[in-house]
Picture 1 (cartoon, rainbow over the protein chains, first blue to last red):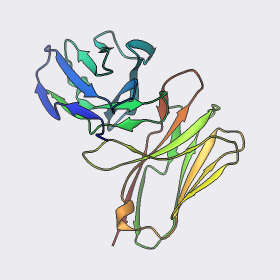
Picture 2: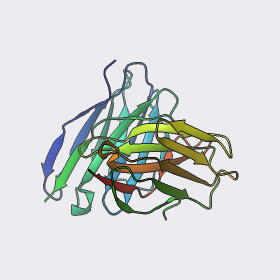
Picture 3: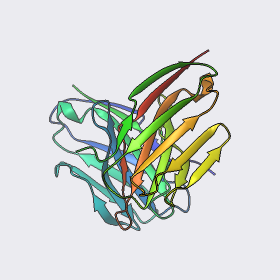
Length: 111
Length: 111
């Protein structure tokens, strides 16, 4: 069974640009969660989707958004990038939203 | 505000030594999960503890959930270099559909 796939693996952007990250969950998993990981703040919850509906959202500004498609694949978008958005963005899939299977992440660097 | 505090933050020990990592909170969780993360990869679930006072063993790793379901510990017996990594605890509250992660304990086991 294939694991959670995140693309791209690495990304370099400049301030003010926008970025879209993609996540393909494990087959059969309908819940997809997104987390931001930084050395200073650790893993911070961004949002969780289940069957195309956002069930919970973390304390991030509106520049961070996400969506889930009918095939459970998910994307997250960050607009007007800031230096502080540099982080490892992790996607996790789950059957029910609790036991999480993480992808390898997308390392975003904002210059 | 970090709801889950982990200690110690860093631990460097010799192969064969024992160690304990703590995860503490003032909040009650419906379950506590422990993950291990290696460089360049996403966290991998080690165990989930659900019942207050519960003890689970995974080979040389022993996990305990506090009676009040506010804290947990991870004990490693006879640590090996393969145990090196970032250990994360994560708390789950019913109906929240999100995990709250601790700040992490970075473990280095020297051969």
